[in-house]
Every structure is written in C-alpha cells, then in structure tokens.
Image (tube, rainbow, N blue to C red; front, side, top):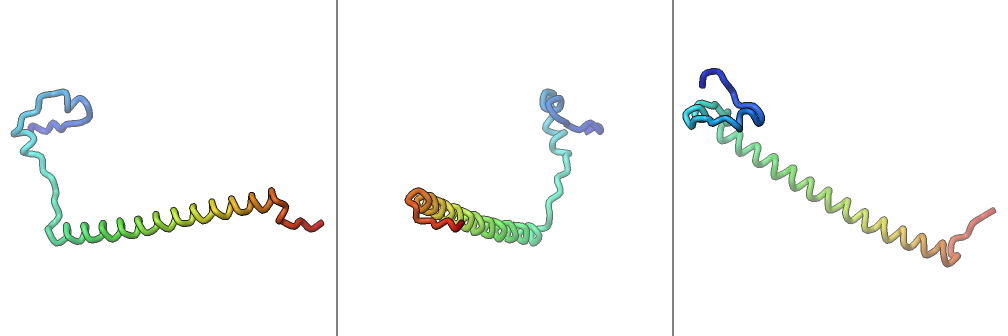
Length: 82
C-alpha cells in the first residue's frame, strides 16, 4: 500500500486491491500465549455463568419473599407496635 489506510465508510466505498489487503500486518501472539488467553476466557466465562446463576436465584428468592410479605400485610399477619 502506498501509505493510505482504510478508514470508515470512505475506505469501504473505494475498490481496494487484494494485494493492498495482503500487505496489512496483523499481530498474532505465539500459540502458547493464545492457549493461555483461551484458558483465561473459559475461566472468566465460567465465573460469569456462576455469578449469573446466583443472581437469578437471588431474584427468584426475593420475589417469593416479596409476595409473602404482601400476603402477610394484606391478611393482617404483621403486627405493628405503636
């Protein structure tokens, strides 16, 4: 390429030669580092999934307790001290 880089819609609108694209350098980490990245991402995904499950369980429990509190209030089961 002659120093021109693609940017935004302008770059997409122009016809770009395959040879120009072939000259673009894309950094790629070594295979062992790629494996470490994959392992880290899997670990984070697992932790995120566990956290999501815990939050979903908490929301379910809070909704049940809310319904029980409303029922107790409506039926006069909650004593209010004066």
